[in-house]
Length: 163
Image (cartoon, rainbow, N blue to C red; front, top):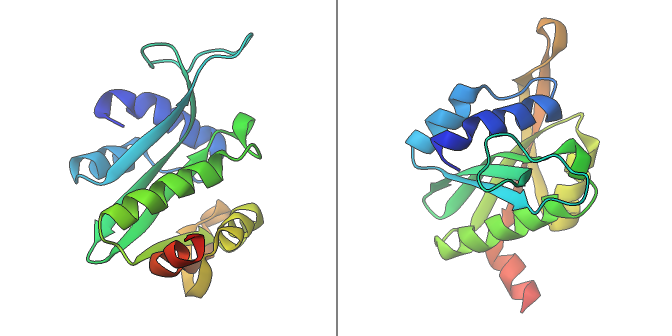
């Protein structure tokens, strides 16, 4: 992901979430050197390309992650609504786990909205365990706040069980 991709990424973000990241969140993440990658697909017959992508492609999803000492923190992972339930979320998690292990990380952390049951199921099936709750972490509609469930994946245990 680069600055030239921000319009396409931000448009997808707005389609996917009622409380999306701002364009500035993505720009700041890129400027900070965070891992920011897009998942692009070839055009299928009748499919409209994502504006701004050259060559013409479809933006299936993306992720943004921050590397720390022996850990990586997943800040944002999104699959285009039209391409959800096709395995792309798991594909992005696989790529992130592999990259994180290559960075020497022992764990992968994330927060997820307490009410986002589909995402929580994906993370649990992937092997993430609940580590706690951050009260009133996310903005919600009508000036409300929503709790975040903090989850952690032990990458060393995941590597051993895969071996």
